[in-house]
Every structure is written in C-alpha cells, then in structure tokens.
Length: 476
Length: 94
Image (tube, rainbow over all chains, first blue to last red; front, side, top):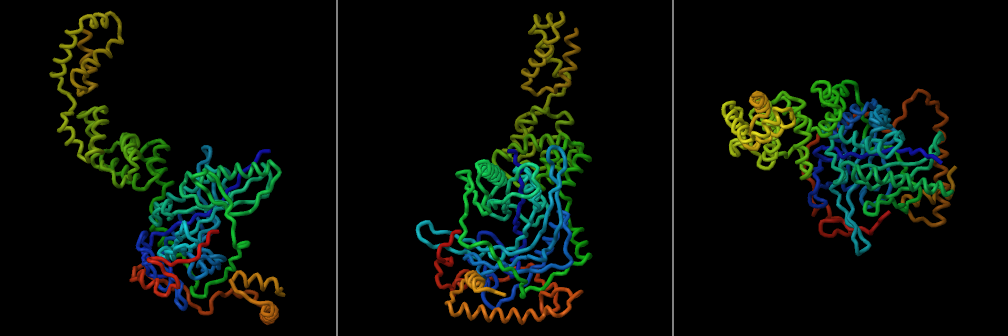
C-alpha cells in the first residue's frame, strides 16, 4: 500500500526580552539557580502578574512576518496541570482568543512554491527546569526559566514529508532571527519544536491517528525523528496493527522514538480565562507602528540579491540564510562593487574557513573591508586570483589586511613588461627544441612556455601580459 | 447533571482526596449550583459580547525593565525541602 505522510508542527520560541512575561525578573540564561525569581514567577499566593508590553509587540512582529491576522482582542487563559517545574499549578497561556491566526509561509518544494498554513500564534510563559537525580528518586527545580516569554506557532497539517517539515522549521527560524526577537538557539532550548505526524493511505481524505514527537533539539533530529516515525507507523499498519494516539520521545543516541507513558490520563487542562490579566486590545495604529519596524525579511532579501546583484538564486539563498552573513556580503559589495566576485569569495573561501572551525561570521577575522580590498587588488591586476587564494587564507589566520600580507611575502604580481621580456627570452633561448616544434605547428607547447615563465617568476607574473608577450615572441 | 464519577475525576485532577460520603455530598451540591446557574439561560443574551473579566480595563502593560529579583536564598526560604540552590521534589518523570 502507498502511504501519504501528514505533519504539523508546534514551535516554541523564547523571546529576547530583558524581563519575564509577567514580572521584572531577568530572562538571562545561566544565572545561579533560582536567583532570577520573585513572588510572581515563584507562584506565591496573592500576587498579580502584569504583562510585558514588549512580548505583545514581538508576537505582533512575528504575526505580521508570517501573514497572520492579528486579533483585535485577545486574552490569557490558565492551563491547569501539576508538574514540579510549574509552581502555580497552571501555565498562563492563550486558548480561545490567541494573539493572531490564519497565516502562512512559502516553501520551495520540487522547484515550486508551496504554501504552509499557520493556524495561530499565541503568547505564554515558559516553565522552570528540572534536573533529575540519577541515583535517588528526587529532582531539583530551577525556576529561573519560569515566566520567560514564549510564542507558540502552530502550523496546519500541511507538510507531506520530513524534508518539508525541516524546511518549514528553518523558514520560521530565519524569520525569528531576522526579526531579532529570538536567538534561535536549539541546543539551549530557545527554539523548540514538537511534531504531530500521521500516515494515511494515498487518496484517503481523513487523517490517520497521530503521534506527537518531542525532544528533538536540532533541525537534523527533527527530520530523523520524523523519518523514523513514518517508517514505524507504516510497519504497524502494514502488519495489521493500529496506531495509538500518544506522545513519543526521540532518542538521539538510539535513533528511535519511544512511547512516553503518561501518568496523567487524557490531557484535560480545564482551561479558563485568567482573571488576573485583562484583555489586550490591538488597534490598527499599533499594528502599523509594528509593521514599520519590520526589517527586510529573508525571502524579500533573497529576491533582491538575485535582481540587484545578478547572482544565482542558490548563492542568494546561502548568503541570506544568516542575517549577519548577508550584512557582511552587502558590505563587501558596497566597498568593491563586484557582487559576483564578492559572492564567490564569501561563499567559497570565507564560509569554508568559518565552517571548518564552526565559527560565526560575527567573529570572522577577515573583515568585509579587507576582503573588498583584496578583490579590488585582483581586479586592478596587482595580484592574481591564484595569489589571492593564499592571501585570503593568510588574512583569515592573522586578521591582517591584504596589503600587509602582500608586502610581507613580496607577492606583488609582475606587470613590468621589460622584466618579463627578459625572462621570456632567456626561456626561449634555453629551449630551442620546443621552440622549433612549436613553430612547426605543435600549438600545445604554448602551455609549456607559460609554465616555464610562471616557474621562473614563482607564479608572480601577470598571466594576461605573459600570454600576450609569449605569443609575439614565439611567433618570431 | 453531574455524576459521581465526574466528581471523582475532577477531584483526582485537582489532587483532592475525598471519602465516599463527601463524594455524594459534593455531587448533590454541585448539581444545585449548576441548576442555579441554568437559570441564567432563561435570559436572552443575543447580541451581548461574552465577558471574561468583571472590570472594564484593557491593556494593562509593564515596561520591559529589569528590577531586583529575590535572589536564590530568599526564593528558597519557605521551601519545605530546599537543597543548596534548588528546590528538591519527588522525582516525576512522565
């Protein structure tokens, strides 16, 4: 039987505010456990949570960037459950009236644009962190993270392959990072993803029973977990079994998903409106202020790079995948005015060095100004492209400017025709047999003479000038 | 109408231990409350916006400015089982 996979994703993004969503405690990661805590985020009785305005504004920005309709009025609800990382016994979230709904993003699937629907975006608070004792039946609770603002972005079940799911996730990730509202760090958990996945016989309209996957902390793991889960479900169905609706945890080391046997029976969160928090009314004027603050988004930037810089869509994709990288590239182009050469050097050399060391473009030793200078030196004939390869590597190692390296290593290209003429005639004199053969019609020997000149000048001769002079002199 | 099973279920979700006599008592009391609330259904509320808050205030915001937290020592002061920098709790792994 042929199956179709159906995937929907729930993404949680920690917002880059200075303070928590309902109190003035710092959101800083990695402080002494339980130091960024106050009566509100500790869940003391009688306290009053007050909403951080920036959380609403960041949520609005993400909503606009993903084509969601922002609701005129929204409000908070209590999601009730007991777990030690949740001191109040409920999480403040949004339920019936979320911040925004009905959005979408586009993915490229098989060369065509595919629309992935976004059901809703809502605001909520993060829970604390639990550390489990390996030897004793106890856990340790750190509430520094309790109350850190999150937005949850819920997609429609529109993805049909694990690759589409990973692409969608990357799209959301790059938008959040471009908006500078989330640092996107998956390992530290500031960008998390749960996946709902089911299969159905091809052509069938209704959805199959789904499993919810958790604990995937990289794009690669999301894709691997989904691939495994699809195979697992197919195996069960093909062998006459039934899929159980359950939550499954991805085990990275084993490469499998395992059922997370829930002690709580069916999730019954008994949502109700939180009486401590008043409704949020968003008018058009506020939306317009937020819209004006939106930066150029990755998709728009990609299109502009292709159009204005005449570089291939693939190059534009690589250069805009990271906002800092795209800024770096544009700075190089501004200073050297050669978009194509800039793209080749950034993608071919600079990125390769950075990737080898898993280093970020923000800490790149080769500044945009240095790289632009080097490109200008190639274009005015001071150095050859071959020399530049060595120079850029040296620039990366030492952080020096290209001119400094050229001076230190005596790498300037020889463009002095008089000097080159002398070298060439010496070579011709030393190789009478080759000269005779060349003049007798063996054109291929031209390369031999070029090689000899380059050898004699340690590769410093300007190739165009050598070609011209050799042609003249060999012709006799 | 609310059944005794539903009372048991809700009590469990709220982690409340109640004995059999209490279950019967709460079932009957809760049903009385529901009957009373049902009276409201006799009113015609067509065109009336649902209300989630008793006060007519909206957009109560706070600026994103850090203020002093309690710090670890004070945060743990009332904990029944504070250990070092942490709250210690019975292990719960789902």
